Figure 1 (tube, rainbow, N blue to C red):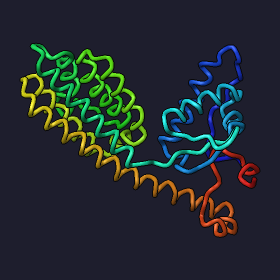
Figure 2: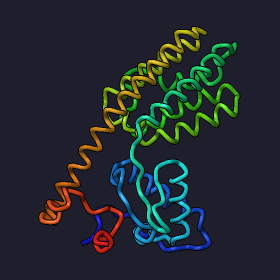
Figure 3: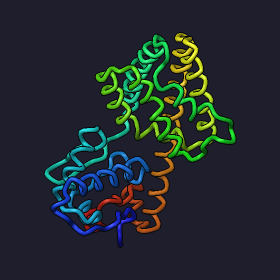
Length: 266
């Protein structure tokens, strides 16, 4: 039986190794973000190579990159495991993010003409009828909003730290934009933050920003746990339908979506 998770096949091109590695990286990462690969699951380089149509070299490069970013761990020479969601670490990263962005507010409100605020206002301070409603699009704009606040300080090191934190919490942060009320809240809160910055009301801007980040942190934790529960239940049901005897004996553990049935038996 074919594995449920499939990647579009593409002819192997050894001369285009960086592009292949980038494609594999994006595809596996999307599977992680969509909880098609669940925390704790194991898979092999060979299977990823077969499903993506790429050779093992770009596959290994992509998986090593995901490991450096904290999403995967290597189990042996060709085995990989999806890391568990560690909310204690996420909390620490959110704390770092808050510190960096609050420092950015101080820098921006000290400027005579806060850099980039007019451009951001054109996106976020708009009538409700002109607001975007698609989660992925608003998520992209949200990352750009927070990124631009830090970049506007002109402090390259501060921006580098913020970019690294943003990358590491993206797997949970993107879930904040799967619910319409959170999208609406993001527009309202961003608009209020920008208004306070433009009027040089630093303390108010920082209070609004800190509340905004904290509400988002609480939301993504709740949604993440719920999505994980739903994904595991779906896979448990699928495994029961495919093989009710072994599913019961295995306690409901599903076959890994990135490995073939034969590999699951080994």
